[in-house]
Length: 102
Image 1 (cartoon, one colour):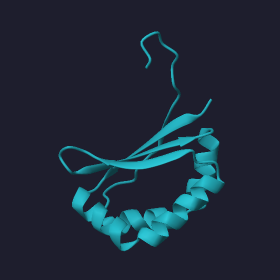
Image 2 (cartoon, helix red, strand yellow; image 1 turned 180 degrees about the horizontal axis):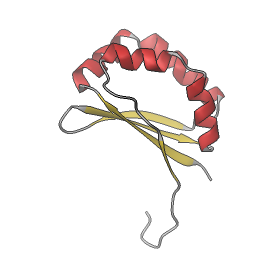
Image 3 (cartoon, rainbow, N blue to C red; image 1 turned 30 degrees about the vertical axis):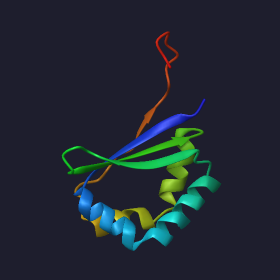
């Protein structure tokens, strides 16, 4: 069963979106490499207050993400360019099979 990975980044949404716009080709290239490492889904979300961005990925397992992340020096470069504060830590989530799931 796959895992969901959440990575919270303390960063201004507008600064992050500007960085993403300035680096769209590089972001796409990193995304393609993520797929080669097994990534199933990837998206960015901004907090309502605009001071945080959340990366939400789906991976076959946590190890696949860790290997990809460790081999992607561009990611810390993107975060630095966007003005990210602190060191984000990935959190992995496993889906629970409950009766109310839809």
